[in-house]
Amino acid sequence: MKKLKPDKNLKIFFALILSVLFACVLIKYPSLSSEGILKGLGLSAGTMVPSLFPFIVVSTFAANSGAVDFLGRKTDNFFRKTFKLSGTAGSIVFFGLFGGFPVGCSMASNLYSQNKITSSEAKRIALSSVNAGPAFVIGAVGTMMLSSFRAGVITFVSLSLSSLIIAFITKWILPSDTETEKSSTSEVSLSDALVSSVYSSSKTMFLICAWILVFSCFINILTSTAENEKLSGLIKIFAEVSQGCEQISETKNPAHLAFVIGWSGLCVHCQVLPHVIKTGLKIRYFLCSRLFHACLSSLICAGFLKMFPCDISVFSTGTSAIVRTFAVSAPAAAGLLLMCAIFILDLDTRRKMC
Image 1 (cartoon, rainbow, N blue to C red):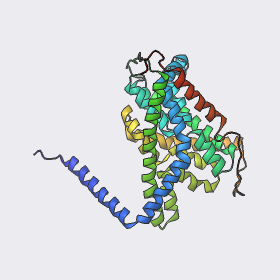
Image 2: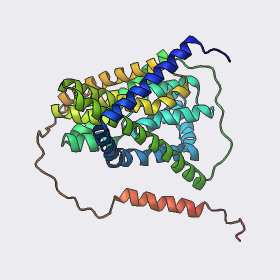
Image 3: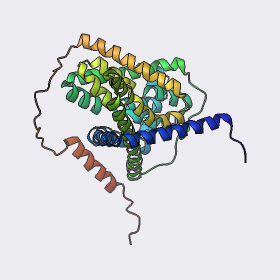
Image 4: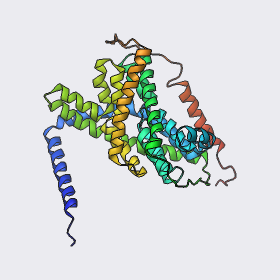
């Protein structure tokens, strides 16, 4: 048998120690681990799935159906002059602003694997397009945590502007390479694109929720056993974005929340790292970009707050039920009808039926 190399032995030994350590922690604190899993399930079902899953489906459908390619051709001249990106790559940057954390990087890795964008463009997207969607920033953080819709909008605009600035300055850090882009000639029916988009989005959403459960479990154990409250707060801020926002929202300062969301937490980093690795970007550069994005977003948000001050209530007086005409929303109902129409209109009527 071949002897393992010393560095490989060291990695296996380290992994074995971690496995035993984690198992001992779970055995010692079963109630805390169960409580953390329940919190993670509530967070996944109550916040992440409603705010992320629809946008992941839409962005994946746009890529699979060829809508991104079409939009890229129409905007190619603008993005090349402004960001030195192709129209397809530039479209991904803007999809990432509204789609939520994994959308930009996942679209970049998928289109890079299809040779529709270059290596440099994929790396630049990975550096600039890890963003929280408007449903999370404006709805969950602004309206629910800060009780201020205006504060949520200012925070979202600050994060988006910071991402665009990073996309702009990286044209000097990562210059365009000489790879040739290949256009896809295969046509996919809209119904097939929709089915595959929902299927792949479901897998992506499952992985996101799985990472949330893992981090929620160990964060609950660490924060419950830590004697220092400041240390517990720092663990939440740097480990998981939603719990970090909940922790820092006590300051009632949107600039602080912009920093937390800009950093996005180790949990989100683990969700997007598989896509980042596919682009060829080194992990240390990705982490540095996250820290820079956090600092820049906080500074921009502080500047906006001076120009557009907003009142933020310290205490919530209570909750009230909101009655709406539609069970969910009119756009959601229209979207559902549109998807049904796509299936009906895209059927191959020439196919013989048994």
